Image 1 (tube, rainbow, N blue to C red):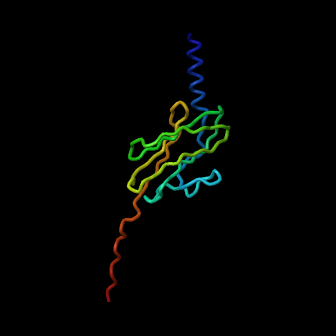
Image 2: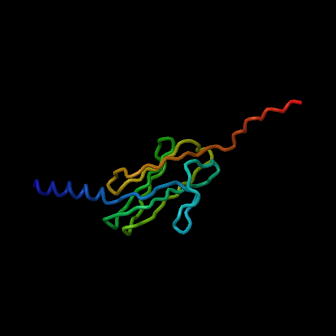
Image 3: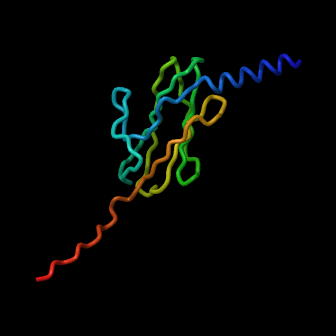
Length: 137
């Protein structure tokens, strides 16, 4: 019985350590499997954003999960396949113009262990600019 528990513990640890995040970022789109206009701050009129993730995995196939949060509230959770040892994958989230503020995406392995957190913000760029002082004569 102890041997079985020991093997299960070892397998769980090995599986959770088998996926490594090479890069994870937020971008406006993905074209030819590459992120387009990655950033940390986005205008409220962006419409949609993607969380693009590049991973290596010693155990394939496997899955990772993107968990999207707006102001610390979970708003979307999606499991994504990792089919080869080097893999790029992404999820897309519609962003409404009134959802300004702090966002994050947590990237989890198939056991639910946190691999990476990507923080970003959506800002209302329509705030009026400060008036410049008039020049005197």
